[in-house]
Image (cartoon, rainbow, N blue to C red):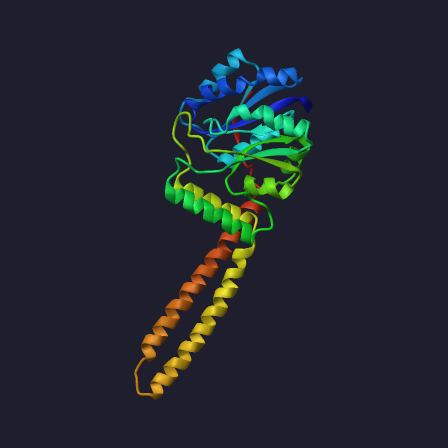
Length: 310
């Protein structure tokens, strides 16, 4: 490991248009860092792209030996790409960035200064708005962060990006967490350390299309909830108590109405059975999702497989 290297990790999935634009913008910061005795290295992690992302990175490598590639055997997801980049990074400073330029490279000098001059261990970024996003996605994102603040003891900041610069000790702390089901935003908060937050307005992609559909974001939010909160496991107990109380109340009502001569037994019985069955299925689903995470952990499969690397 070298304290005189800034490793820039760039997860990529079908980013052949964005990679050259990103590299050109990030390379503009070379002069600043060389003045401070720091060299840059670019680690592009290809997450099983189906376009020419790998070929584009290889072409960059022909003219710049600072460019490195990790190419997966298939699509393993962004979390695996982040982990692979962190494991390969050799720098004393490490940065995570997206290739679409929504993470502005122009912030790198400021982030470096906060670490070296102000004594921070990590400089993270968050968006102060969600301009350009579909309204329904923005609404659900805000609800997710609000929910996490209530049910988790780990700090997960609203609008937080993966874009951050970290010292080596922060990276080593993150790598010490070996779980298979990874949720980086939660991991960053869990390891702690002194963090400086930079705010900036949302920036549109420089090229290409987002790879995050609503369904993928929804599944990712479930990963975060289950990875850093056990609150959902309390839901079956609470719902069971509520429906037991409701069933008791309905039983009393049916008895009273029966005494008054009304025939409501079958209706009440049907409602109770339907409600209780629904609660049982919901509770089993919640517990089952946690068991599925345990199942993946105990299998101990590799988190990714590398097809090509340089």
